[in-house]
Image 1 (cartoon, rainbow, N blue to C red):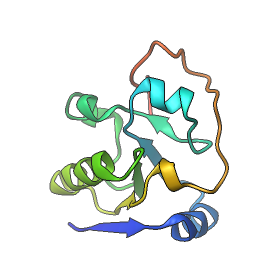
Image 2 (cartoon, rainbow, N blue to C red):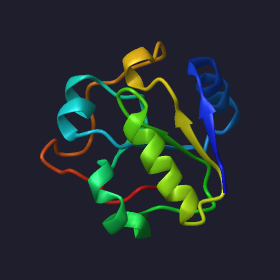
Image 3 (tube, rainbow, N blue to C red):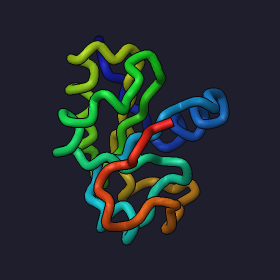
Image 4 (cartoon, rainbow, N blue to C red):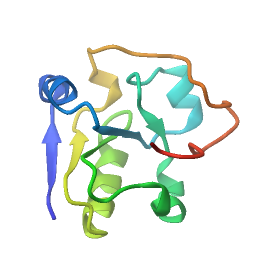
Length: 118
């Protein structure tokens, strides 16, 4: 499977067109909470992905996000190699994201991985 790179405009269009889209933020909890995240994004730091694959649905459209695009590149290709069907990555990362940004979550900030990704 291949990975599709998205710019800000492409992700914003996809967010409108695909309400069930999974936004998977692979940064650290400090980045996710401190620098903000796209509303609705689920935190799963990149180093936790292999042990948490059971929380992800390979048939669900998934956009992988990090701060500058490096970790999201690695994580999105990892998912694609593990039979995820529709994987995207925000190429420039949150550093250049110009859409909505949230600094809060229902999750405990000490929890590195979402308990479940719905």
